[in-house]
Length: 101
Image (cartoon, rainbow, N blue to C red; front, side, top):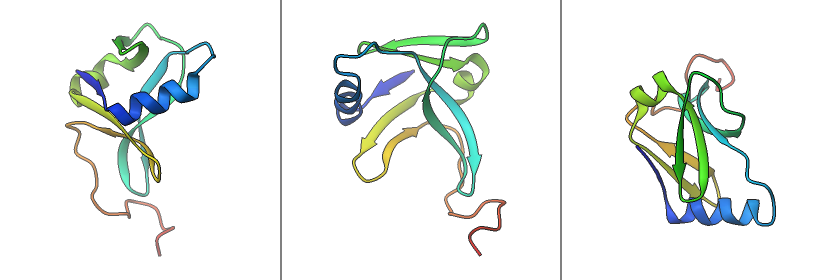
């Protein structure tokens, strides 16, 4: 259901080294590029699924997990974390906003 790439695990390990590791929320956001999954720090809610992967706890709304799984978390030093899933996302840089011209 959820997989961390080697680079994503290394980045999380580096960031949280010597710190208490909180739950990491996977959620859906919508912006100029259309819908995409993002990571944030958050606490578990009653409507969440909890996934324990490679020493990290990920929380995600049950309904979103059902729609998006399987999910792969990747990391690139230029773009940060990228979450791949079976959700359909926009391939263009422009969605519904007017910031692109």
